[in-house]
Length: 133
Image (cartoon, rainbow, N blue to C red; front, side, top):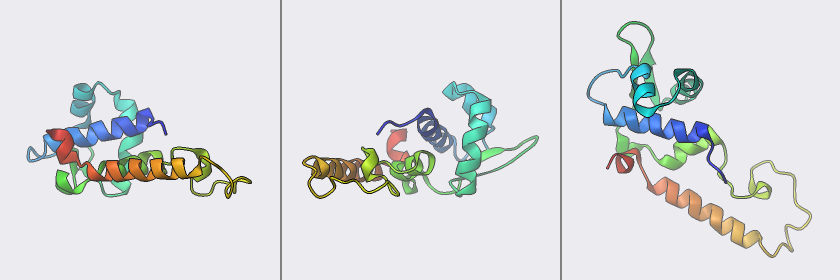
């Protein structure tokens, strides 16, 4: 599993919004500048976060974005699964993957299943509030 730029930037945006909550709406140009992410790239990430109600915002003068919940209520795993899709460590464990001919006899399958379980368990144990510390 390799987390793409999209997932990494989504986390950085969410942490930035968490750090500035209570200050009203945060303009994306401010987030882009602080996080050194192009505004054009953020414009691809924000609709996904907004559509799934992770953030809310308004356009135009005085507009910007904010979290829809407290930072403690956002699990890193949820944000990454939203932006990355499944977090399976190998392709054969991804949902919808074609059945593997060696599924029953694969000597490494249990290793990959356990790794996937631990990855998800760990990422689900970390919140935005934890990343703000």
